[in-house]
Image 1 (cartoon, rainbow, N blue to C red):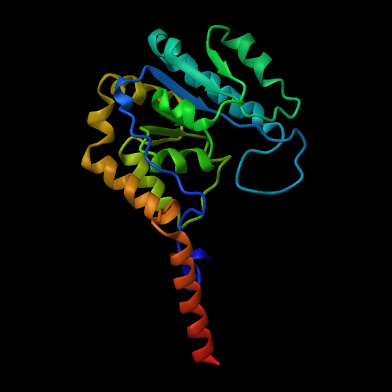
Image 2: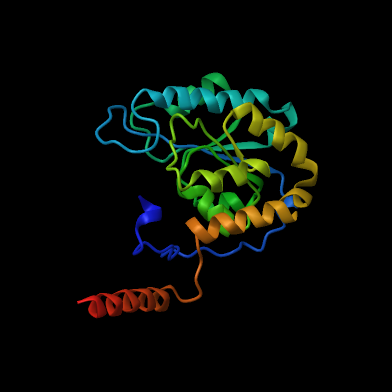
Length: 229
């Protein structure tokens, strides 16, 4: 497993992100970032597969339902750029015709600049980047769809304790309702900052010179290997 592999080091991101320099508390958008997957499963990984996407979509609809009318007006839903014949645009318009939709064409950085809070609804790159960019972020997904390895569970438990990670869409919505008018107080609080920093140090580490850091680690591993021989 990961914890038993002495050669595995958390080197960080090759694609570096920077803080946006935006006062997100003054922004009026609530950004929900969604995803899709091919209709027919062809590989195994920790995430929803095939028709489970419909369950995932129902969770997004449940999240919208749990929001206040004011926050539904502020909501923008970022659809995944590849539809895979799920007709996600039509499904959203049928259920929530007044919610603003982005078909996945705009740069995600531009959407994050406009939002007060970013919601990531799946376990992938989006929230790793929003953490680094210092965008107030809330996560929610079905843990039965996105299974975690044992070594990662303590990190997500900490995120759960400070209100970042939720396993139910309604829980995420209620938390957002509670912090919406004072998001800075929550996001900059020591427990939340510590949780985000701890998570990033492990899974989304930044570096001032990633090439130098990679060289240093590889050189150290090579030297150790030569000494063993």
